[in-house]
Amino acid sequence: MASKLEKLEMKGLLSEARVYFSGPMDAVASRKEEKEHGWRNRVGEFLKCMNVTVFDPWIKPEVRGLHEYGKEGETTTDQRKDWTFAPGREGAKARSALAESFWPALHIDLRMVDTSDFIISYCPTSIYSVGTPHEIIVARNERKPVLFVSPYVEFTALADLRNHLKQEQDKKAIELLEELINQVPIKENLNGSPSLWYMPLIGGEHFFDGFGFAQYKDIFHWKDRTRIDDDEENHPPQRPLLPFLEQLNRELPKKWDRVKQDFVANDDWLLWELKRDKRGAEVSDASVKAKVA
Image (cartoon, rainbow, N blue to C red; front, side, top):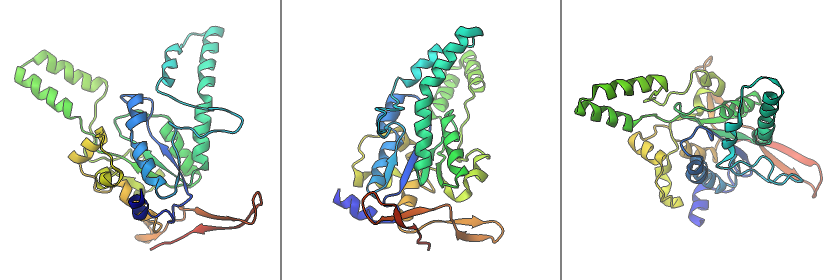
């Protein structure tokens, strides 16, 4: 642990900052796999070594007086099977019960966004998500920085299957495969480009095409290989997130000014420097951490 702390500087600009991890949890291949081995675990470990408070929607913080408020698990979405479009009282009652049951999770996640200084979003274009855009919009309405990871999306198994069917000369299977690709639809994203809507919402200097886990795996002893590791080996990130965070801990990033055609200070990065006179006293001195290159 000492080597981690020495490398990542616990007393840097990010010390005592708060971050929320936003990204798909529902439409992923496996909620169990995502919870136990997803990107949030590694990025959380990385940032905690900089003394950052991490808000992870898989691990809700305790709420005073409300035990396990908004807690989510691997089976949370199973209740969707009770959804109905039936008209009348029974249908309205069933829909209301479902909506009310998920309200605590929605409420606490958005409160964590509101409490955070910045958020990190992992948004592959291949995975459907509703909560993630909601959280991003809440953050940007408050001018909070969103660090947006948009990875390369390539379906290698799809190419393998297509080649196999061609070798087998199975014309019917090839037709069905192409129809399935259109119905889903299955779309690769070989340059990692995010939705055009996100570009002005987030700002061009806060996009990343991967995490860069390989650079830090020996420091943190990340031995379990994940799908992201495979993807980043096949498509090495040009702009990985973790080195950016390490640099951010030393100096605030700038943003591009299209009028001046140059980099300028980015006042979205408001990282509080709070001091107290006494226990329970009001904040007596507040300033913003600022160290711009």
